[in-house]
Amino acid sequence: MKIVYFTHSLRSCWNHGNAHFLRGVLRELIAQGHHTIAYEPENGWSPSNLVADHGAEALNAWRFAYPELVVHRYSAGFDAAAACEDADLVIVHEWNESELIATLGRARGAGAGHLLLFHDTHHRAVSEPASMRGYDLRDYDGVLAFGESLAEVYRRDGWGRRVFVWHEAADTRRFKPPAEETEREGLVWIGNWGDGERTAELEAFLLRPAQQAGLPLDIHGVRYPAEATALLERYGARYRGWLANAKAPEVFSRHLATVHVPRRFYVEQLPGIPTIRVFEALACGIPLVTSPWRDGENLFRPGRDFLTADNPESMLELLALLRSDPACREELSRNGLETIRSRHTCAHRAEELLRIVAALRGAAAPASPVESQREATL
Image (cartoon, rainbow, N blue to C red; front, side, top):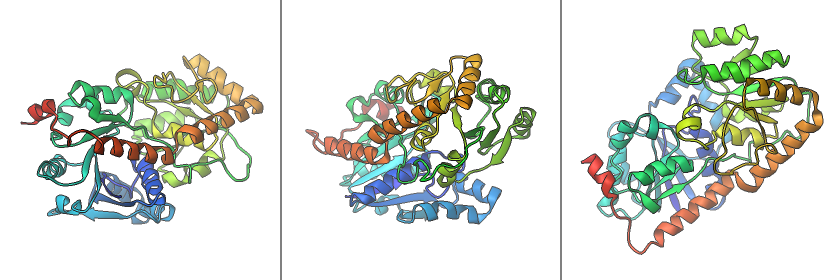
């Protein structure tokens, strides 16, 4: 099967976590014998910011890690429909321009023979609903939503059984425990500062308890303004800047534990959706503690795969436990890794995607327009 994927970027993971999953799942599809091609805009914001911050050589990190992936960059005048003429499946990520999304939909509505899916891996369906409804999806065959709560948003918009939950997962070809254990020390947090929507949570559940527990804290990520780095300095945290995602397993292997502090949208409006960092950390066998987060889809085994702190005081207690109890760390590492390998690898997601394609192809009739979506875009 030939699969064409339109992404914002595969080359850059600068503030673009979806690139982690796409690299892994496309590689798994290739390993299963499928032909995959990714298309991304020539001057997307993620690679442009990466180059501005770290130089053009920073784009080499992904190529060394994923040499088998084929990526074409396009600019003005690109014929997206023609690029899909011999494809069996076309997937379009939500970080694409509305005109490209509409162009591909029109081609499908005019009789293009491939299946066409929209892939949503963000909170904009609830944080920016007006902009998302501006996308013309009327002739798309279905939606891939990266969590049940997001899928429900699309069901309410009329997609019914043509929305499929397709979680992110760990690329276990790259994210795995170290071959040989070395000395570990302190905590690590890998995440972007964002728009300040979790500043209070990061201070309460990461910075302050790490300092109080006497655990050195390394922080990697981008979009840290001066006030953010000043806050880190006040708590003694060491800001390390951007980290190429392919190097994250090496960083995890040097630390005792890591912490997950979800953005508010994934706690309040889209509950139960873990970020890619949860999958990757557990795949690397590093003990994980989360701030309050409800696993509404039973993806993991809370209390066994990771620990959850209900409040800042509980976070301090749990970090102190992990600092002093090697047996607890070993058990969490073993359990989390077991769950990832049994349920949440990119190989699992590749198989799920193929089952979704088979289900759509086996439908009694070709994909019909989604009427509520048509009305919203006329």
